[in-house]
Length: 566
Image (cartoon, rainbow, N blue to C red; front, top):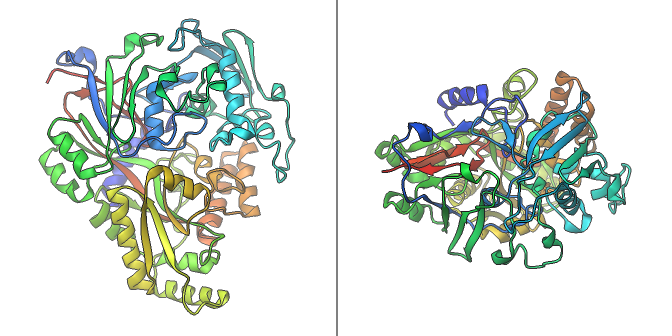
């Protein structure tokens, strides 16, 4: 990933980028705002305020409690709003809550809700809506993949894992014992397990969104858009499976005067070539990550052709392959290490992805805060090296340990994407040439792919992780035993201890040292995942489109965008 140019870029981002991907802690700085001018400085608003973008995959769900991917995140931002929202500078602003107070010990938050905040059907949003929605996300039967993001709340983990026989903490069966309650119609009181500096911003994350009470009794609430009652800047107007999604401005939204767009039209195509052609012909106003894709082989040409519209921005996200550590042959650590060490990452980012990505040898990306600066600067990602001869030796040793004369058939799965396909083919070719191993590559539709990963129906699978908040914990907690995002089913007692020790530690140096020890176990010792590169966000934006917000992690927000006269 050309460490020079991108690291300069990341350095600039880091001066600002200590915010959450979908949230951010107070006084943590700014994200990366793609807007270059305000409405008052603009050429005048266009009469037609209809934004046109593309999604490379249909969102698997519209339920905030079930969401776990970037496509769903993009759409849910249109439909919902949490207690706070994150502005263009990455700071918390009033959302449903007008203001809040934090106790001196950092354990209690009191949110005052806006009495003018309403659901799209006109119902007033109450504190009880948040209590009920958070309880719903935490109920074991909901099986929310992101329920653990609520574990910062006192008793939340005990309630969510009350039926988990492996849970060693205090189980909670009565939600009244969880640290969230409505003290009156418009006051929400939250008590945390431990001081969490980034908790305020985390309330902007989709798992924390309120859901209308009718969702509890209407089984079509999230599957038939006509049944959806939402509280965000837009409402669902059309959802044509496999074709398009349309949202329209929500006039009941409490900050409707801040919303300039009247409609957002989202086409649904996985073809990056078709998406780019649509952009060039004026059918799209924005193309590229995180919701779309610029064809990798055309990045050099579009950069030269449209230099004022092209952007390649360093973001705090990691692209990696994960091994199913319980599935042969990757239940053997030496074989996992052999596969990780036998590929050459620089040609992948130089010749395949071509977007300025940085080869990765760790899991926590640049842009994530450490003790005094960046975690990645303070703890180098030198956990392994690319070494074909050593890889061959490890493969041979691993095969002997398992009694193999030849490896079992191996399949690498990835979701539908031109870029993912090219990376997969390049890596499979390296495995063939360097290890003599044939690996089948298999493309899967997004929803099927996610389901197979979660159910461990894979041997090797493509994956990517973007920050939900700016702390190494967000990247390392997911690999603890039993975590719902731990698709590899990796489990290591020392790793779990190192990560959990960071929660209660008040010593920044000790926290970061524990994170570094955990990452060493994950990558150097166990190679549960195979880092490939640290992402960049490659996109094209029409000159007349303003107000698009892209934060340091690559999460995008179109809600405050607007179109100028062309």
